[in-house]
Structures are given as C-alpha cells and as structure tokens.
Length: 291
Image: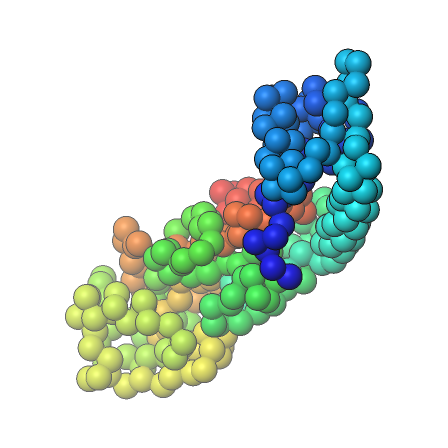
C-alpha cells in the first residue's frame, strides 16, 4: 500500500459522516467538530481526487456518483475497523487481570490479603506472574507490575504503593543475650543474603557492615534466606513490609531498622490502556497498603 495515495484519515472520516447524515452540520455534531472543519475536509478530499463528491441540495448535501462509490467503500471499511476493535476490547474485558510481582511480595504481602479482593470483586479474575526480572509490560501484556526500588522505570506510569526500608531480623534464639543498638553491632554474625537484590547491601555498607569481611551465605531467592533465618541459622535483611508479619507473629525479632529509606514498592501501569478492572485492583492495593 502506498500511503501517499491515501488522503487524510480525518478527512475520510468527516466525509463518511457527512455522506451518511446528508448534512455537514449533523456530521460536525457527531464528530464534535465545527461545520467549517467538515467543509474544509470535504474540499481537501475533492482536491485530492480532482472530483466533486458532494453537491448542495436544498438544505442538505447530495452525493455525486463518485462520492456515492467512495462513501459505500468507506462505510464498509470503518465498520470492519469498528468490529475488529470491539472484538479486541471484548477479549480484554474477559481475560484475567495480569499482575507481575516479585515472589517475596506475592508470598508475604499479597497472598494473605488477596482473598479479601476476590470476595469483594468475584467478577475480576487475577493472574499473578511472579518473577524477579523487570517485565516488558507491553510485549508481555501485563496490566500491573509491582516493583521494589527507587522508581524511575521508563515507559510506564509509576505510583508509590508503600515505603519499604530494610530491617535486619533473626530468630529469637539467634544472638540471644547480645545487645544490638545499630547495624554495626552485628559484625561477626552469619549473614543470610538474597543474591537478587542490591539495595540492602548499600544500606549495610553505609552502616559499617562490609560483607567482604563477614561470613555470608547467599541464596537464590529471598524466601530461602528468610527460611534459613527462621531456622536460627543467622541474620537476614528484608524489606520492612515483608518482615512485618513475621515480626508480629514472633518468628523474627527486629535487630536494626533503616530510617528514611528512598526504596519503596511501586505500582507500574501503562497510561495508554483503559481498564476498569485494573483501576479497581490498584484502588484496593492502595487501601490495603494504607491500612
């Protein structure tokens, strides 16, 4: 297809509406533009083809034979476009809401709460996609991504969900009797670290813990390092929202907490996508985080 042979789609759209209604004024009302804009689009098309397409007839406009041929083809073409877009929108409405999350956030924060969302919105099916890597939300057709960090993800709309400074924790039996007032007091502990994140290492280095001089066991996921700490094998560092329920239940004790952290959990969405189900889920996430 040589697009140079095809006139402005706005002009074609204006002409099709004028041909269907029989007046420029009615076409202008349908497309929410001025009468003059419709008239200008008609003149543009007639100049492009070198043929008259509509002629004044009483208070309205009548199609010429060439205009009638063009109007019929445009009506069929626009109907096909409308059908195709409606089909895609209908598929979007019925498919599950795809939510990409980190495994730790899914297991420790989202799953204990999501039953309340399903109870309130049984009509919205949610598909959780756990993973540590950043996803291409457009290519992977992701509606919402929940990510941990300092923000600045390109090509998406990012909203802060909740702050997520770090906390050093251990089982109550570990370091029993040892006084801990700051992170540096934990020198010589057995550190149980998640190899996938780096923010906690910066916090530790800024507060006197050089992991190169410490005994460290690195696990492939945060869940494994957390389970090792639960078993009393050492100290682990977790985002505060992940650690909170384990501290409340008594599984862990707090050894040191990061203050005024720039890290947070963020909700990532695509601004160009309109989805009522997505907006309901985001609203629920924010209410849960605030609570």
